[in-house]
Length: 337
Image (cartoon, rainbow, N blue to C red; front, side, top):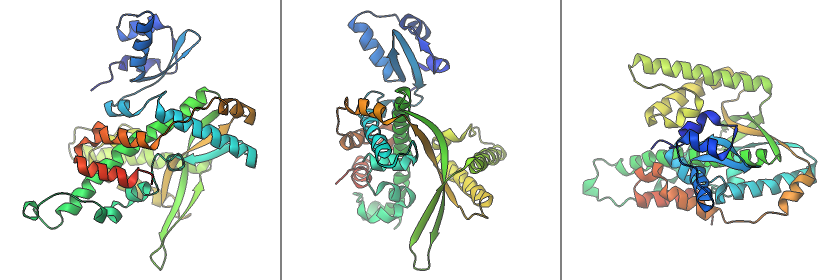
C-alpha cells in the first residue's frame, strides 16, 4: 500500500498552512473537530507538528508496516523521548559532558525496547534454535534439518523486519528532541574489532570514528553498492540498490550478498588497524541542563515494552512467520522478565 500522502514528500522540512496542505493532498479542508480528526489521520502517514497556525512537514513514511508501528506522538516515541531527556540531563549533571555518541543498540537496550537476547540472536540466531518449538509431525518433514532451517529462515525475517521498524522509532524520537531544541544529532560510525580468543571466547572492542574514518566508511558503502549493482546487472536482474538505506528491502539472498561485499571491503580498508565491523551511531550535542529540567517537570511516563510486543506481533512484515513461532521470537528477544 502506497502512502496516500506521498505528495507531501517534496515538502519535507517546510511549513504549510492547513488549506495549502489540503490542496496538495487533494482533500477538502475540514472545520472544528473534523479538522482535528483530519490532521490526526495524516499523522498516521506523515510526521507533522502544528506550530503557530502552520503545520511542519517532517518525514513522510514510505512503508505500510512502518506506518503501523511508528506513532510520532504515541507511546513509543513519547517513552524514548522522556527516557533520553532524563539520560542526557543526568549525563550533564554527573559528568559535565555536553555531547555523547550512542548506537541504535545502546538506545534500544537502555530503553528496554528489546531485551539482552535480541542482538545476540540477531547476530547468531543458531544459539537459540533449541528454545523454539514448531508443531510439525516427523512424517511431514522433508529432511532432518527442516525444523532448524525453518527457524533460521524465519528468524531472519523477524530480525530484519523488527530492527528496521525499531530503528525508525529511535530516529523519530531523536528528531522530536531535535525539534524541541534539546539536542542536535549527526550520524557517525563506530568501528569494532571482533575476535575469538584461544579459549573460544568472543571478545569485542570498539572505537568511535574520527572524520577521516567516517569518510573511509562512506567510501566503502558507496563502492560496495557499485560492485553489488554490477553483479545484478551481469545477472540481468531487474532491480538495483539505490542507496544504503534500502538494503533491508532487498531479497534475503541479495541482502546477504551485499553485506558479504561490504564486510569484505571494510576489512580490506581497515586491515592495518584491525577493525573488522562497524555500526551506525549518533553524535548528540546537548542543550544546557536547565532546558532539560524544564522538560523533566512535564514528563508523564508510559509503559513501553508491552507496546513493542503488541506492535511486533501484528506488524505485517512479520505475518510471514507462523503465529506461534512469531510469539516465541517476541518472548525470547523482546519481552522483559
